[in-house]
Length: 495
Image (cartoon, rainbow, N blue to C red; front, side):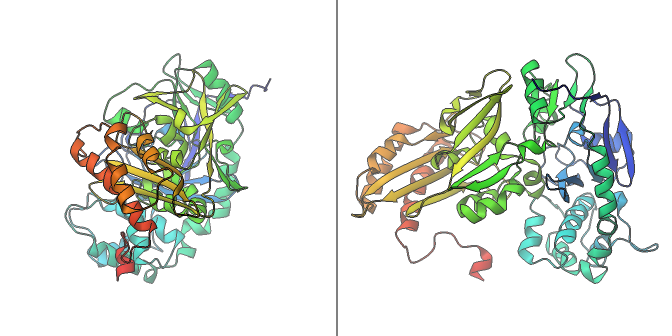
């Protein structure tokens, strides 16, 4: 029996330079609304209310499990107030240069004409600020990556790129207040972490921030109908676009116990609270194709918030991570109270909107085997726009050839082709034991109709999805047989 933690009835965090205690907050109150309506900080704009345009970008500083302080750009429009306990929120109003001068990022934007109507400008400034603090002299690739989640409708991006390249000529990142005051801020944030559970509101209209993972398990077992909010990149849209009631809501983004990330004996174990950004380096090192996929999920703000565990638990048929994890043979650990069970990830998805998760049970971690020597693995995402777009269809392939060139093992999984992420069992059967040749692949392509009956929606027609899925198998064949011309080349490599 785990001891009950202390309970406090207020959220505590730091806004710019001041300590804040919030005693009244609805479970679905967004940071954006709170900043604008309660604090009259109007620099943070609402453009899309779904985490796409970046006009609402702010920085959120948080302590990592190792005790480091990191600042990340996030979308305030879909970030809930309940997720900010123990954090440092930095808005555009906090930026200042030496004396009465503008901040270096702002001055660069002015001098290089990076703003026209100005509506999106604060969001660009905050994204560039976050980049500048991490990389004072960024490459063009780093700048473009940092701005994936920011849209401008009138200036165009080249002026903003020029401004980004010039920021360090206006000042040094090491002299910025966020750098100079880092140790002081770490101490202030550490003091806010008192080990208490936060509960605000009464009855169903409650906001809960568990004290730790064990407390989270106890809370969810007692409140199995509660909405679990990790990164809120999906749940935020339930509120802003679908007007859904998410109360009571349990916020788990700050639980260090769900942040485990380790590789051991050829298996990467990822805690459910690990964000895309946090997983990127490890996955890029051990499974490069997954790193490339993560780089295309949303913009930086979404990757800083969204979690791999949340992407799995949400059960969306177009979630980006389940198909490649299924192809890799990942196993999912589920927890209810103090009891745990582990299942193959593919068995977790039962039907549209239905997963093998009992009331009060939650996704705790996922274990992902690293492809062995000789195994070929690839992931292909098809979307209307390369960056920051939702998948139309996504195919993942894991294959090993025998010494005689026949297919010894193969696992193929797709998203966007069925009501759940799904294996292409008939296609796999057609390939298994056959020579890895174009004729074999073409014959297997005819079996897709046995596995999938895709739908037509705003992202793609059923006919397009069916054809694209087949062609992805041919692409995998071309890439694994040493085609002279690479199938995919970045513009940086081409240059």
